[in-house]
Length: 112
Image (cartoon, rainbow, N blue to C red; front, side):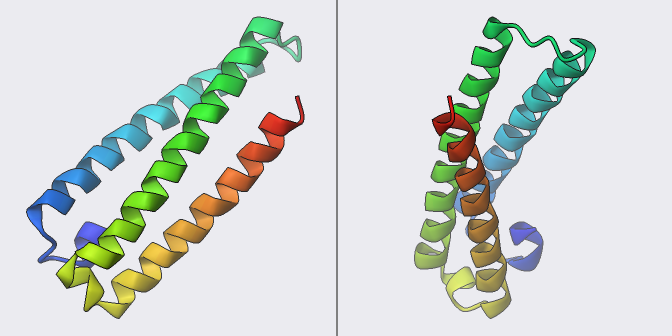
């Protein structure tokens, strides 16, 4: 979305965003695989599967924290973004949604 909003975005940030898209896609596929595994388990989640899900949750939490830092860097360091109010609003929204996910993930991790 950012690349569409900011057509003149610096190449290093374009490439970084492409890397993030790939990383999030891979994480998404991992999540889907675990959902399918849990669905097939008929509610009988083994301790090993439970631990794997917690590790994936921790991974996704850390990935989101890193992405938030990247988004803040974009807003501070990218000239085209710093002069594009719409891009800043979108990035702030992405950060807020990512922080919400982090809160949910932390709740799951701290309940164990």
